[in-house]
Length: 108
Image 1 (cartoon, rainbow, N blue to C red):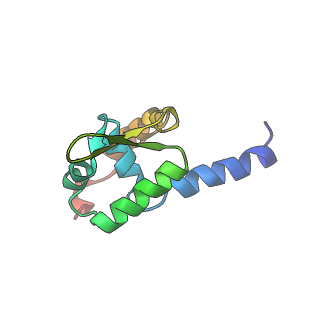
Image 2: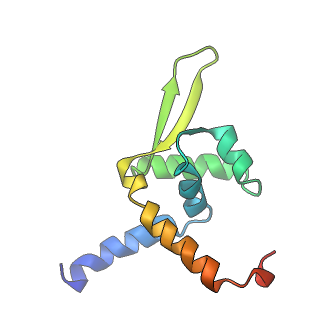
């Protein structure tokens, strides 16, 4: 694949992953299926409204799957698709890079 063919795909991938909270949501879902409230609790600075928007966007992109479990009350769980799970090594490398290169004194 030459540079001109790859560029739009790369740009789209970066566009998806660079949206605020997306990488952290995907990183959280690498732990397995979770309910909305579990994701929300794990990312306390993320509002419910934004989490809902991001989950819908990730579902449309085929990164996240929304499962409705027919119980009383109905339970909804979110999990990564194969496309989402394929991001694990990328996010793992970002995590390693951050550990090595991000100075903790610059964090809030």
